[in-house]
Length: 351
Image (cartoon, rainbow, N blue to C red; front, top):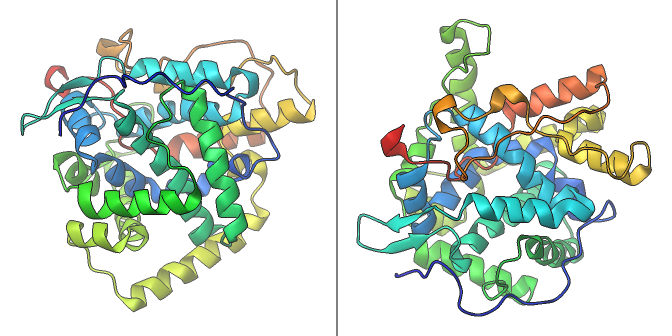
């Protein structure tokens, strides 16, 4: 497979209209429960050959996984929740990927802005919503799946990319997804890194390393188990994962328990801070032009990586004082939301 860095066809010129609070995507994408599928989305993104090659060559995820994911989620959420500023956020994310290119170990060229590769990453975020809602939020009707598909197209327009790879309908998307899972995904080094990932204790966490490891080792193990259950059967087979009818029953029971538990979780905890702020702007409780919520400063890239265009750099802007619930929600999402594990960062060889 040889990839051109850019599609020769011009982007579709249909107006990019941001999603709003009446969308199902707003309801589900910022939900903390998506973090339960962190290993799933990180590994299935990396199974796409070009994306996996970019991660193997350019990522420092293994060096600082928690910080890397926590700060990346903010702009990713912003493409959904930033309203009139969503297209600007999408362009920002697109810019992060401009220099992520090269040749993989099999001599295949790759570029993160190849439309097929860029859309694959977006497709996994769309399926993250579908699978999270199915397993942990009570499920979706067929009409809701069709609505979410239409919204994911609207959402994708925020990036200003070619719409060529985007399927025409939900039914066409299912064919696209099945073909990728059966014919194109592969178990590569970047995928195996996610399966075996260790979360090093960040410098700012005040607890013994042994205690930290005891907290996160079972969490990652549980996410591998969830990933095995959520994988499509062809992907599970490629990964050599065992899944029994008993496992499926346990996962469904666990999902129901999570659904019930979250009925009493406040929105400030359940939703990502970028989503909470968006709902407040929509309700008029804060100004429409209020500064966008950024990742905490201590989640910035390592000192030797700051200033590189492929990193999200948290911007510090004045904001209203945070309530105790706001602070708790930010802490919970910063610490435990592992969705998006595979986004490329910078070159491992210079780390």
